[in-house]
Length: 91
Image 1 (cartoon, rainbow, N blue to C red):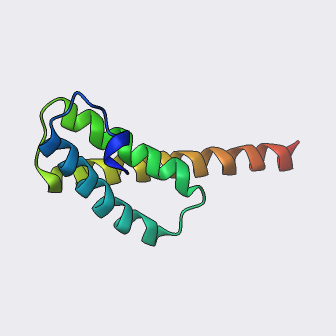
Image 2: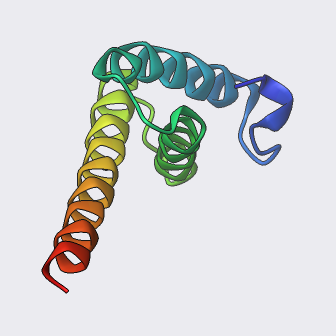
């Protein structure tokens, strides 16, 4: 994420931390074979920015939480899609 897209209310140091954590999380998440990479990357960025905004500065924690949120959201979307498909088949 370019630094100019990270909210200006964060300090320059925190903005660099957010950028680095996002890139690390993205490298790991992209290995999962994503269906919608843009949405997954946005979810990572949003989670990291929110956590950094409330004072979290540990890059490992930022990455860990962001990965779990993104993976959870992707799993929920896939489950919902399977449910819809099963309902259509049953009808």
